[in-house]
Every structure is written in C-alpha cells, then in structure tokens.
Image (tube, rainbow, N blue to C red):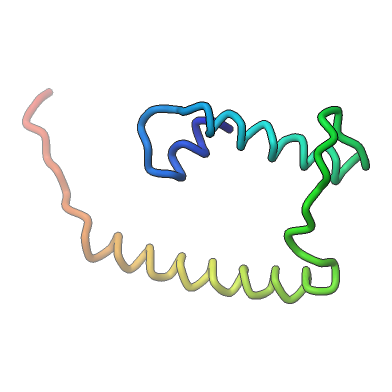
Length: 86
C-alpha cells in the first residue's frame, strides 16, 4: 500500500508519510468492518449510506466515459514498434 500511495503522489521513493497513510487507511478499514481498531482509529465515513447508490451509479458512468476516452486515445496514439532483433 505504501508503494501505491507513493505512486499516487507521483514520487519514485517511498517516504515515511506513505507508510503512515497506508497504515492509517488499513486501520480505518479494520475499524469500519469490525467496529474497533487496535490503534483506536475512528472510521471516517467517506460516503453516507444514503448517497452510496447515487455515488456508485455516477462513478460507473464516469468510468465508462473514461474507458471510451482511453480506448480512443490508444487507438489514435499507438505506434507499432518493429524490432529487427531475432
């Protein structure tokens, strides 16, 4: 998770803050699933239950649009690289 957080922040080297954020997110997940966290992390409700259905539908639509743009970009910007090595 630390490496992923580092990459999301467009860095090559994992810093202490990346490990801390990863541990905090993990503890938050444990607390939201089990009601408690060994480190007393209180889960932050990123999304209320009432808005979850609308949010997920919106994200699905956004993801579909992004997928179409990605396919279009790939189709128009891909070069075929031919290697002469055998």
